[in-house]
Image (cartoon, rainbow, N blue to C red; front, side, top):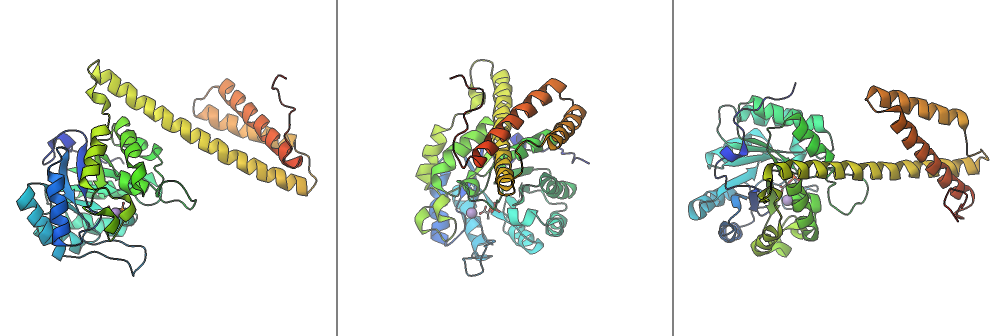
Length: 373
Ligand code: PEP
Ligand code: MN
């Protein structure tokens, strides 16, 4: 079942000022001064609609700063009164929901470490029944779209109408440039599955470092995301959590001024918008194909190493026939032409053989392939 969303167009959300719908503020509320000073500067940035600050912080290790708790809700209320910004915080259980609502928090987000747990999400959804509040569901830390959709469905079923997904990247075992892998194909698939659901990108938790925020935010805009959640702190280097990924309000302003919003094109905005978004999707899938190909070739090389150590020939015809047959059956079932499958798999096979030859020859380049001399 795909959740049916009613009345959730982000344009109808409280305070909506246009795309990107911008949520900004520190990772954590640390003191009244830090919260209010940051909020006052952010309130001067046209795009900022919602002030965020974590009050209860899910930290990896227990000795880290775990948030100021309920005391911070008073500071958020003050932000609302003194700046006019709407306010947001993370909720991870029903008690958090009740406390936050008591203090008039406008938007609640369910964090990545919570959206992995259907019991907790259900507990939160039950606490939200009959409440008119904006809710964002961050993707679970692992790249599981069904789990993400499941969490969204639980909240939607509780009757929440102003509901959005937040893409904050996915944890991976490998050391990568970004703190969390964007795996853009997941939010794209989410858009395909639930077209009316607003999607907000959180470049801060994807990047993990200030220097990558712009490129991620721009990519999200090119993919036609509805909004951005970007962490901002008056003194990022001194922040008690996520210090390396937060921006000063001034740097946030500068980042926003560089963002190119494709749908602002004066030509045929609607067409350009659709084409631009589709082409970005193609780029994402092509990047994915290249990554997959690289991973496949690495496995081929490992097999080559094994063949070398055990004195086995590189070409194993029976195995190869099996590979092609399997790909053909699967590909045809998915509507791909036999020519496409044949061409691609022949090329992949040739590259695998070349790689294994190189391994056999101890890394000495194999020049037997078809390049003209
Ligand atoms: C946060 O927004 O500060 C946070 C803890 O995010 P996430 O759940 O994406 O890690
Ligand atoms: Mn954070």
